[in-house]
Structure formats: structure tokens, C-alpha cells
Length: 325
Image 1 (cartoon, rainbow, N blue to C red):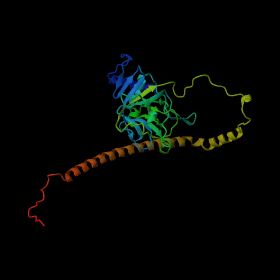
Image 2 (image 1 turned 90 degrees about the horizontal axis):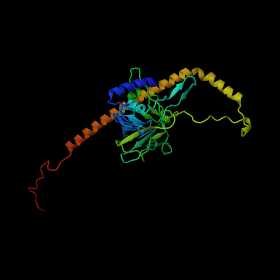
Image 3 (image 1 turned 90 degrees about the vertical axis):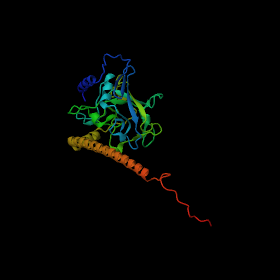
Image 4 (image 1 turned 180 degrees about the vertical axis):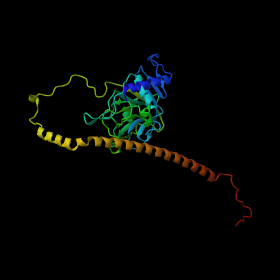
């Protein structure tokens, strides 16, 4: 989504809410529904609930009604409001995961780095988001690394895409998520590698606060002077590259793979769209199954109430006419 497009959305949103951003002192936090923007502390604080899901994760936080079965937290805040709140801190969104036609490769998400942390209660200190997740294989917590503010985009009908998908903070790449990880991370099911950390994550439904803070330089930026390549005299060995072999391999790739680039990109896009559609249908079925289960539980309780004998509900057995032995 372009900065110009979202500035238009920003103007509409500011007019729709009783916020006069420029007139308010920076020391006074501004607010959006379920979001507090503390410009003095450079923090966006989002009211959330914990979700104790089982299985691989794709998101750290989603909107209520989004892919909750693959997330650590859910919130009633709108993804577009989270985007707006970050704009109010002075951030500009970068770019989501994308395929570069010129470079003929996928490029990682880029944008201003965002530290994501969680406060589990008013009297608790914030902890890194990664501590609420752990590796499925090693059971070690996720390293504490920044996410990036990529921004979602506006659809052709003017709607903010992430408001439709429910994406807010992802831990694998999605092109419609506002906040992503700064490296290529496939969302294919067989590559998912993170799960809830039961030793740290709060109980289902617990109220928590997700804190978003801008940090450091934008992902992909480099500071300091570039280093020069070592001279031939500084080499540590006599090993040299077989350039002819490399050229042959490159030529083979270009002759066999490159001509199919358009078809591969089309297949990748179709795969992405189909999988997303199936996941939305899966979530709908999960929601329907939950609704039916709640009805079953309710009817079972009513049946138990009707069929369970109660003291005093019947006549006591008569002992008249009993004979002694």
C-alpha cells in the first residue's frame, strides 16, 4: 500500500474520530478503539486477549474473527487502526514480501523495525513477544528480534485489506499483514516451526496489552562505511572458483528454469490465493463446529436437569404390613 493512499485513509479516520492530533500535547496519550497511542513514550498499546491454541502458529496477533486458531493473541482493535496508530508515531510503512521481476526472486518484508512486547497485567513488566512462543522442535523460546512495519494495502473497493483478513502481527510472511518478520518465512504448513510456550503464555481469555515500539533503523538499512574486498595477497588459501563450471550451471538454469518464470509466478500466486481461501473456509467451519458444540452442551445440560431425580420428588415406600421374622 502506498504512503499516499494511506494518508488519504488517515485523513478520513482522523475526521471520523474525535482526535485532533496536532493540537494535543505529545505528553497526553491519544486513543483509538482498544488502542492507546503514547507519543511521548513512542508506544502503541493494544488491548488483547490470550488464546491458548494447540498446533503451529502463523501469527502473534490477529483481530477477533481472523485466523485465531493460528495466533497467540486476538484483539478487538481494527488492523487499520493499528496502522494509523503507527503513522501517528511518525512511522512510514515499508513493503511486504514480494516478488521482484528485475531480480527474479522473492524479497523479504522491509520497513521500520518494531519491537513487539506484552504486558500480562498492570503490575507486570513487559516481556518480549517471542517468549510467548517456542520452537516446535527444540522447545526453546523465539529469539527477541524486531518485526517490521510493512503496512497492508487498500483493495480496489477502498477497504483496508488487513481489516478483511484479520492479520495484524505475523510470524511468517503474508503480503496483507501490517507487521511482519524481516526475513523470508514461508507460510506453508509443512514449514511452520513455532507454537505456544505453555510455560509463559497466559491462560485462554486473559487480558493482556500488546506494546508496539519503533526501534533502530529500518530493516535492510546499513550503517557505516562499506568494507572493501580482500586483495589477492590477503587470501588465506590457493582455492579458486571454477568460473567455467559456474557459468555452465548458470546457463543451464537460465535455459531450463527462467523461461518458466511467468508460469511459476502464476502458480505461486494461485497457490497463495487457494490456500488462503481454504484457510478462511476452515476457520468458518471451526466457528460453526464451536457453535454446534455449544448447542449440544446446552441441550445436554437441560436433559440432565430434566432426568436427574431430586429428593422429595416422589412418594416414600410404604412399610405397612411388614412382618417381623
